Amino acid sequence: MKASIAVLAGDGIGPEIVTEAVRVLEATARLFGHEFAMTPVDFGGIAIDRHGDGLPPRTLEACLRSDGVLLGAIGGPKWGPTAPVRPEPALLRLRSELGVYANVRPIKVLAALRDASVIKPEILDGVDLVFVRELTGGIYFGRKSRVGDRATDECAYTVGEVERITRVAARLAAARRGRIAQIDKSNVLETSRLWREVSERVVREEFPGVSIEHMFVDAAAMHLIRRPRDFDVLLTENLFGDILTDEAAMLASSLGVLPSASLGEGRRGLYEPIHGSAPDIAGRGIANPCGTILSAALLLRHSLGLEAEARAIESAVEAAIAGGARTADIAGHGGPSIGTVAMGDAVLARLKR
Ligand code: IPM
Ligand code: MG
Image (cartoon, rainbow, N blue to C red):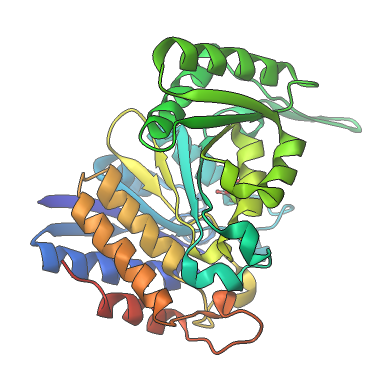
């Protein structure tokens, strides 16, 4: 098949990890007889420096023309909270322009990494959960203002926004263990009461095989560490999902191994590791490329329908890690580690049809 992929390396470790994911995509194309046209474009801080805009028109057009968008990471101290133009709004705008309202973040504990987690190994056995985080609404996109000594961020959701994301979670749950935990703060927030009502109704009326329970976000934060294997699909609004997915990443040992897919109504999606640009280790060749490589696998699965190819990449990553390939973040207590390119090589060496 012929497909076009927009490649947004971004800032910090972005270029290093994306280079490895692109090598894996190229190797996969050769192995399975596909042609992936990959278009690198500026995005984030680097785009601000070069074009004065974190999401220049050329970048947005390349994304809108593509079948899928692969993103590394954006941001850094150079464009901190006091900078005149910051990269984060560009990411929010990109998500919004692409209409990718459903951010799917699978958290699976690889047996080989059980001991690399800061959490006791026996808690981790059998953990296999997936977050469905609403991505284009809520407090991230509400009106913001600063008047006098008062700052405001508005959080709003519509029934339609909750209905469509609940359907994504329910379809996913139906193909898994059939259980949704919807996370909110409905003892305090009106938006949360809407989420509870609407998600409950959608699941009851449209997904007879799926069950839904509702949980306060503070309790969910605790249960994620205490009994993570009880979760199947976690459905959250935007901000709670942002926070809880970083927490849940610790189950899988490191943010560095976790991919995400952001999906909308069509097939085109935005694929990025869940970690940030890690400016502290940028340019040192030690970042873990696995989260980005696995995001590329999700791109093949969800945007191109290439299931066998996606599995081939996922198996290669698992085999590389099981075979002892470890970047510093997953090496555990000062164990021996390899660099970004060597990790890419270890995955490539195990990639097969
Ligand atoms: C994420 C990140 C982003 C978010 C930042 C960079 C704006 O933390 O994808 O989880 O908060 O959505
Ligand atoms: Mg985050």
